Length: 322
Ligand code: PMV
Image (cartoon, rainbow, N blue to C red; front, top):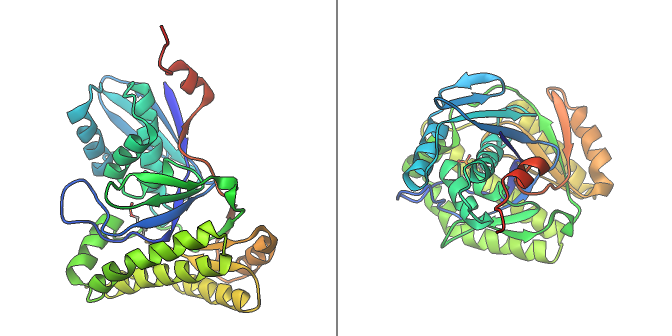
């Protein structure tokens, strides 16, 4: 048995939309932070027939099945029992597919002795879910053309940021991101403008991270998030991932920021709000969001490391030297 862990990552510069060709290639570059605390744990063992179990329930998951099929086209992989658990709500805009496919790729790489280095592993994780490519690495991570394997921009301890996640619903989302992206590409009048400005947003964010400039990172991250939601909302039928509590949280974060607290919001294909802040602001931000009616839970994360094996699995499956 082999066990791997991976954390979700939150994009500050978002990816939304795919290139119209095989390979699950994003249409835009993205920049993310990998979170600590939220974690997917994936255990893999040899089996008589394939079985995938998520959060204790055996599932027929088309994305996982297709990921394993793709790997089997290239590598000799036997039947596998995969048991994956999240310590946070699944499919609710908390990037469970990112941590899920990163942990799965890391576990299979070791269990089946594929011998893939991190960048190749990231390319494989991307085939499962593009954002998973980024969760192979910790800290600040980019996913950009032409190769679209993720790259580590800076370690978790490069710049102390924290993320306060306000959970506003535990419901599974109605429209998953791949279907949503395709809908946006086909129907949103804003999709072309989104593509045209993606590179300059990415460059601005890279500069802000390099200079540890919180205000600049805050401005460009909120802009990228709001542009992505403008594209989602103008898709037909609309992709409305927010609820009224999401909007209240965003309003409160804007007020905190206007009063001088170092914080900004970002949210993804779901109603949860992620408030990115400096450690000095984390208590104020958490208290403010906790008091908003409709907020069900507050989770505080720092920046975490990349997808990894348990120490015993790493040792057991390490390549043997002659
Ligand atoms: O990797 P996917 O297919 O789950 O898409 C993720 C898309 C967003 O989370 C909305 C944005 C991003 O870059 O992570």
